[in-house]
Image 1: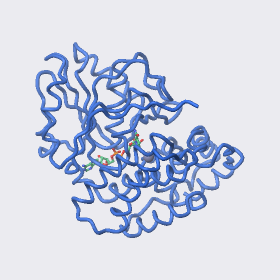
Image 2: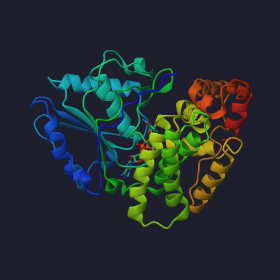
Image 3: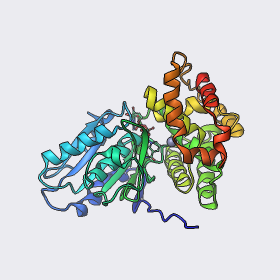
Length: 360
Ligand code: NAD
Ligand code: ZN
């Protein structure tokens, strides 16, 4: 038996207003005046001087606004890398992602692809990245995915939606400033927050569970209950705690895996472009059979906050389209093995998945 030896985020700063320290954190990392910092920023912040005026641009540094309307694609990563290579003589000093899981994953993937040959689709999978990425920094502006702490960057490629899981993926630096999450719309707050909640339920109820994952998962779940169910926190406490719940939820799945909800929501996302947070909610509504207590608590949270979840999104799909989703879902073997156990193939049949998708 050999145990995995995981890298972690090397440095992290936490606190309201810690974003103000960006310049002092980055300055020592500048390689030279021709090696720029490239800031990938969610375009929801375009024109938002409160945030953007604090992004320190000097020499040949570049700020690129990127829409989070769609989840990151391998083609998008390759195009960004090409643009960066063509417009700068030297390799960048660093890539800084500012936004939700979408921007954080883009920053990770771009930093990897600047030092590794070929196309990003060739690195989707486990431990395929050869060269260390360039220095990369993650600054979340919405909490829940755990992308700020994870060892993966999830990309939709021509064949599949799959992460680049590697020792070179985690951020070198993360800035956790809960103030940055203040403008998140309520529905989105719930959807992305539920990503964290679902990470906890899937990790804590999985066959891969161990004391490492459990300790983080239990803490994240307790925080989610405080935030989404008990409702005794003020706005700032709630935002601070959700940022830490996201971190702990991400740490919990580092040493285990996610489960049924993620395996199925990847199918929805691949075929229909449903985004990760809301996709998990759509699926989780129908998973009582696998996570009875987790689903009951989820429904109580959803009702408490009066959130509506899209219905009947699979109503008009063809058999061929169901097959595509089922193929994507079944290909995620570690998720099923974690959720159901080694004999999962006898239990999770194509027919079973089709029946579940038909309810969504
Ligand atoms: P997101 O990044 O897609 O953003 C969701 C929405 O919130 C967008 O419209 C965005 O513009 C908006 N937004 C973000 N911050 C805001 C703010 N402060 N104010 C107002 N609006 C704001 O959402 P997400 O749920 O954080 O990320 C989903 C992505 O994360 C998916 O692509 C998923 O695959 C990925 N993901 C990655 C990991 C990982 O470990 N790498 C884990 C889970 C999910
Ligand atoms: Zn997730």
